[in-house]
Image (cartoon, rainbow, N blue to C red; front, side, top):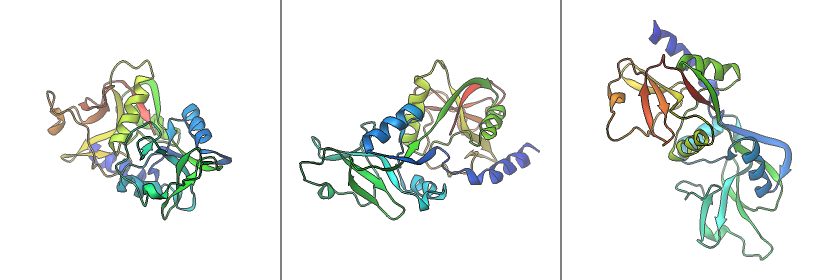
Length: 244
């Protein structure tokens, strides 16, 4: 019965791809002001770290929207970087020669469209995308946490890349949460799945010690530690959790 119910949960949640990205079109901003707004009200400007994330970003309804994402040109290193300083391993059509040489350009940033990523002067004012994860500091079972997120038109978060994982771990470490938190992982029919139907191609399971995730018995729900590692855990345990 639990397997049937969980299959229904996954199917009915397929609409919720990339709910973690919030599009802002109510006030156009420069890239730096957009980043400040995202950091004050969400987490940061959106990051797209691989082809899967971009595919889901489009499916979230972004095909008819465009705006700033979290990339800047580090002139000292001559590299594109994420707004948090991390190196970029995935991009579309971005080349160093795309960066303007005019002395008036005080910022060199990236503007996302459905067809390509464009370089633009960061002082220009545009719409923008924020990355949004919420750490809920209430302790609930995994299914109670899922219900809580969905009541707020959200989901237990899926972490599709190292960037996603780092951002989520960073959010945990900025709270008073002292241990692991629930994420949207569930073990069903001999494999782990994201509850919202996202493909599971990236993982951050611990490589040593506890390997219960390889053949979980009662520990069939996934949690994220403050160190950014995934653990299998008893679904009836009560933990804080991340919606997004």
